[in-house]
Image (cartoon, rainbow, N blue to C red; front, side, top):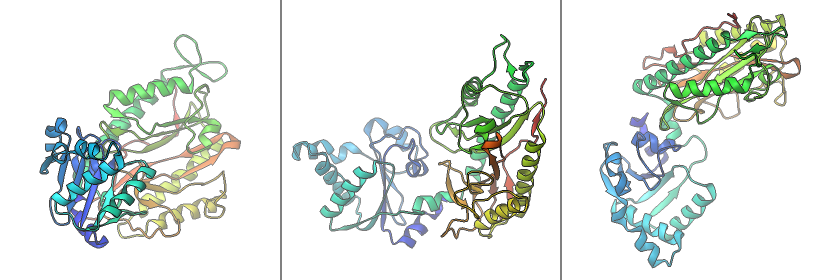
Amino acid sequence: MKSDLDRLMAERGLDAIVVAGAALGNPPMYYLTGGGGIGKATIVVKRRDEMPVLIANPMEREEAAKSGYPIRLTSEFDYMGYLRAANGDALAATVAYYRRILDELGVRGKVGFYGNDDRGRSFVFLQALAAASPEITVAGEFDRDLFTEARATKTRAEADRISEVGRRTVAVVRATVDFLRQQTVGPDETLRQADGSVLTVGTVHAHIRRLIAAQGLEDPEGFIFATGRDAGIPHNKGTLSAPLRLGESIVFDIFPQEAGGGYFFDFTRTFALGYAPEPLQRLYQDVRTCQERVLAALQAGEEARRYQQMACEHFKQRGHPTIDENPQTLCGYIHSLGHGVGLMIHESPALSDAPGNLQTLQPGHVFTVEPGLYYPDQGMGVRLEDMIWIDEAGTPHNLTDYPYDLVVEMG
């Protein structure tokens, strides 16, 4: 949580942190400022145990003020003057500009730098800044950095925002299913539109995009609406030219975001239109019972990896290949059980059994539980995904209000 930042800085020995760039697509900046009209020139400097200072483009000063932080303007630090003095050398000017900012704000000691930028550009800049700044030690983090740790646990207000995105996301799925049910069925079991043409995955995709927009959500990561063989490959988004047919598995995985780069929701159901062949029914039941077992066992304080182990054991007992037995398998259970969700679609905690994953479920965690089975050569796949929030008392809550029916009865 944001209230943990000073503790996390102390654990890392950080005397200050610097976050740079626009809020959109930049979770550390969005997290600190709340988004709004925060542009690419923005810099936030926070000394440990002190309030952050936000340095903003003068044109964005009123948007920046909504953060509640003290505001300084970029014009006060005269980047253009440094650029002229450096004869147009942008690197030298940027180093001088940052040195002035850090000096005026009294930053000394070990300083962590965060935000989204090109990796090579950041590497060159931070090397040059470190060489020119004996008063600071430039620090970076590779895994589970300060903001990843802070964002992993959500406040109730954050969970409420995620839940509202979930409510709208569920509305999109309901409307999509209603749209499918309104189609007629041809003698070859393909769905037909009012003009008699075959309904394709591409047409459904276009309809889903309109529904997402109508709910006031954004779709920066895309969604998955995949049928038949495509449903048997977890991240196949669907072949746009493929027709919709009765009896095929449809994996519908949708993960939109609040407008303006806010919180995500992530939700999957598997459908079959009209009827489900027996092999698909068996596959579906194996996935559903796995999900039920895991959801019933969720408990704050437990190692997250335990639940991946439970899922693998469940599927092995039912004769399916699993990723723990063969990491290269392309059929059966081939991915981790879940992941955190927040300002990024994949956050902490990770419900995986990867070496080094020592995370435990904690109050404030918001994460998915999404077992799946995939058999592309048999033309089918199944995944079910719900999102869970663990409240302050350690009680898990399912934020996904949608049934688990496999078969969509056609009208």
